Amino acid sequence: MDYLHTDWAAMTGNDWQGVFFTVAAFVAMVTVYVLVFNPRNKDALNSQSDMALRDEVEYNNSGDKK
Image (cartoon, rainbow, N blue to C red; front, side, top):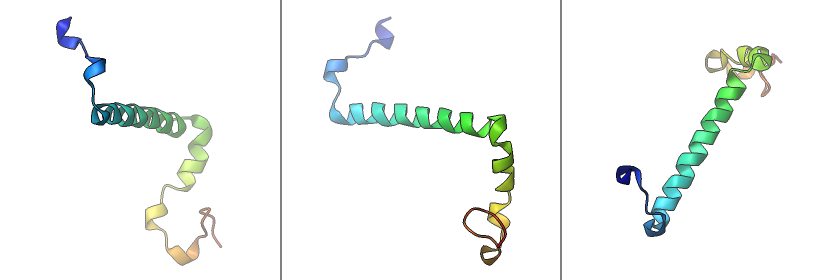
């Protein structure tokens, strides 16, 4: 078990910053996965599926046709 031991007292500010950003990225990814794979959001996401192919003047900011 010594292999998995972490000396928390010896961690520098950069180490703590790395821990914070790693945990924040993990929480953000889980949140996005829950939102994307939630069946209630299917219609909203499907309406935006062709966003990259749309002509800018044809649609407004909400994705609806003008």
